[in-house]
Length: 120
Length: 121
Image 1 (cartoon, each protein chain N blue to C red):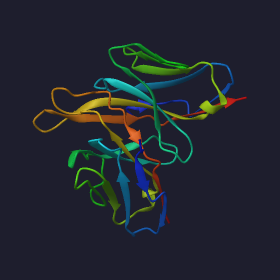
Image 2: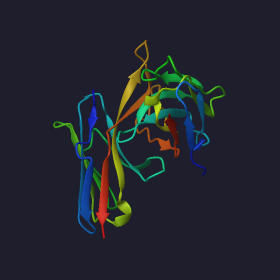
Image 3: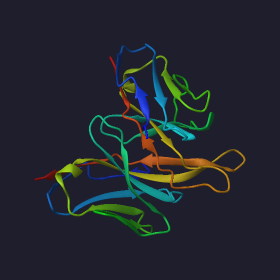
């Protein structure tokens, strides 16, 4: 049961153009969403995030949009640069509860990733 | 500030052998996570610690996998005995966020180590 899906395994974009990476989720308990970037032989690094109470968050060239009704989020990179070439993972966070129904932390569920290639 | 440290970087073993991975989180981070990332997939959470207590291990195959964080700082993940399907990158992550109690910080930004690539032959 894939609760977080990135349906495009790869994306190729020309330098200077916009890159749009998409992510869909199914679990209504997710209340925070994150994008991570991963270079080969390195661990994922945090890029940008958004709370479920917002529909947009912007940080420099990176903007994340959230459409709660459609359970869809997207990452826009403008303008795209060759150094942006990497695998991008969408992740969704939800609270987890212990047997006494007390909040016991958060759990991240990752999508399968999209490999972005920005051509010079 | 030093990042999350993991060792070894690579490990090759034969099936039915045992293996252990080590992780040292970012100083002061109370929450530590172990993930398994199979080639072509996203990371999958195996176990999550808050200090030295287990918060969630629902996706840990407990018949062969075990993990501990005895002093609430570094952690080890063990596989005994290994199977071919355990070939993956094992990632450790840590976070500073307060993830439980009335002032829970849901931002939960996790910082990852470079991982250990395990090949089971």
